[in-house]
Each structure stands twice: as C-alpha cells, then as structure tokens.
Length: 241
Image (cartoon, rainbow, N blue to C red):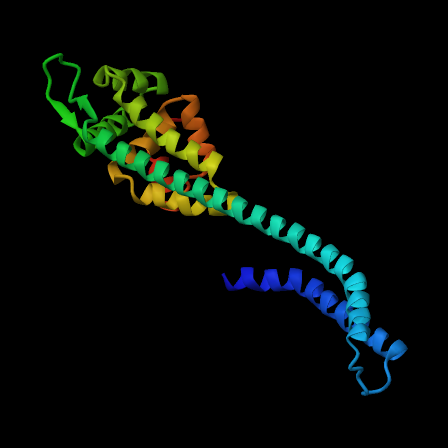
C-alpha cells in the first residue's frame, strides 16, 4: 500500500506543482505589470478587473491540468483493476490446486491391486499395494525379465488400470502448475505437490516412470517435479537394462 501511495504521489506531484506555479506566476505577472508596490487598491472595479484577468488566464490552464489528472486517475484505476483480476486468478488457481491434491489423496485411499494372478486372490490397498508392487517389480528385474514381461506381470495384477488413474491425477496437478503458475513460483508448487502427496503414491509414480511408456509420464518426467536426489536414487533400482 505504501508503495502504491508513493507511485501515486510521483505521478500527480508534478501536475500539482505545475498548477500551483501557474496560479503564482499569473498573480505575480499581474502585480508586476499593474501593481503599485504594496499599495493595494480599495476600488472594487480594480479588484474585479484583477479577478477577470486571473480567471481568464488560470481557468483554461487548470481545466487542462484537471484533464491530465483525470487521465492519470483512469490509468491508476485500470492498474488497480488488473491487479484485482490477477489476485482473483491466483486465488482460483490456489483453490483448484489444493482441491486436486485432496481429490488425489482420497482417490489413493481406494487404490487397489491383486496380490497375485489368481482370480480369488487377496486385494491390497493404497500403501500396502504399492509395497507389494515394488517387491514384484524388483523380483522380476532380478530374474532377468524384459520390460515387456514386467508390464504384462503388472497388468495381470491391475485389471482395473488403477495405476494409470493414479498417474493421470498426478499429471493433471503437474499440468495445472505448468499452465497457470508463473515460472518463478513453479518449484514452490512442485515441492508442495510432492510434500503433500502420500509417499507410497510418489513411489508408485517413480516406478511407473521406469516401467510404462505413457505420454503423461513423459510430461511428468520433463517437468522435473520428481527430480529430487532421493527419488532419482530410488528410481535407479527399477531401471531395466
């Protein structure tokens, strides 16, 4: 607020100074030309002539100055409106961001996969499901399975494509940040996004980056949201040669 007030003074200060100078020099010129020292006339007619002179010279100039001030005020009002619009857009983005984070959290509570290929096998949920999936992938890698074989093994446990749904929700969050958040603030939002996301969900995303070739995973990877050193080290364990 103080900064805005200073800006306003800087803009209209010269105009006010010019107006004051016009009034002063108009009076001074009249006094020099027609005055008699400090012997002021007592004749009303003389004072009437003085008023007519001042009014005739000053009024058009003050009108011009008033127009300039009006133009400045319109410009300032436009800037204020633009700031309000930017603030409102920021609030909408913030609200959308946190709503999507909450939606992701609720959705992950229902994340599930089967423990094995048996149609009647146990169903595992959220964090426990990710731990099981992690062990399954590492087991397949250690046995020398190819990337395609690992994908097929996972798909047998995930008939409902729950993994893709989790990845897609996270992708929408990343996409929101990339599209609606200023570049200098994106890292802050990425850190918040990762920090407020269940750790096991983050692990599932990192594993998916190495196993699946979905385009949304490529976009997530390019964004750098999962570029933390600890996650990069964790990811290396799931690299299939």
